[in-house]
Image (tube, rainbow, N blue to C red):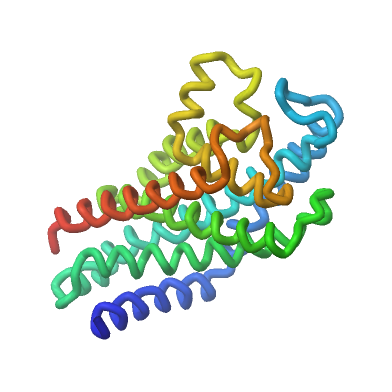
Length: 261
């Protein structure tokens, strides 16, 4: 057990160190969602009230959990793109011929990116009072746990794509084509209630929908939010954990099929 843990921790720390040295990635992953929240949230706050959104909730408050997930999403994109850079620089080939399992390799990469996403998400979580959300200690603890699940799942999706893509340009195109619609259809931007029936079913099939609902409920003191919730909080967290396990296994299988050259 010590050897796999050492391998995972080494890869985890490498991701942390590299991210710290690239300040543009740090600021970009945090400032872009902040700008979206301020511009879209403030701009639509007075005029945009989707059907099904609670009357006592402003749009900036509703959009706030979605922006937290957007922070996690951007960090996952910026972190997992390093896999393509490692392949070009020869580091990945060196790791693949080393006595390390592909599962440990993917876990180390995923935990590194998850840690980075969580740190940036927690920084944004501090702005909850600014958004008018009086978050409690218990709510913050649940929110952080849900953020870990979301970040881990999004990171594994990024790794799954990065292990198969050769260029950074192609990676950005595929990631935006997959992750942005998943985020939009999760209830981050608008609630499912009031949407067309077909769109409601798509949102129910989106695994990120339940993670988003769990995050929103934790921020609002764990109460049920009829605008986004399809199940109770415990069931939503369970589905989020299963989504994490599925994405990790999928990324590991793709890594196992990758050749050294």
